[in-house]
Image 1 (tube, helix red, strand yellow):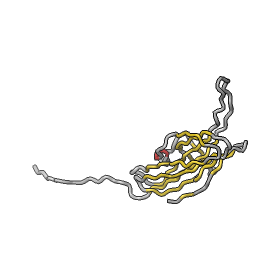
Image 2: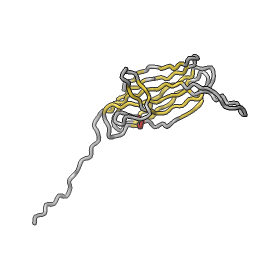
Image 3: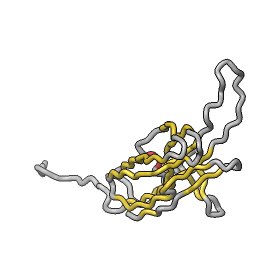
Length: 169
């Protein structure tokens, strides 16, 4: 398969950032194939922050850019091929971590499908015990886009004839 190894960097107005690499994954897979893709996420902040990631559908807008959507176009989406549900962990200050994205291609598909794994760097928990909770937090989002092309022959069932008997009246 072909990889586009572009790294994406999300930066807030306050200068906080994190990066995801690769930001775009293009793979040629066979029906029924399993593939593990490694994605590196880096917290550029000087403090630890919670990070979550999850599979999501996306669509291309008329201007050529992409947006994460709430609902998948079931004909073109590969969102359901990702094994992960939502995963959350703490990413340390200036820390990089490699996460695996496991893909299982159904046996009965062919053509190109699209999906994303979205990484959200979440606000640090700023609540002080015993104090009223009021805080404004900024979530920085960076998706890794997947374009998966499934080639090869689709599995087809074949009827077999055995023990044919012709009965005449």
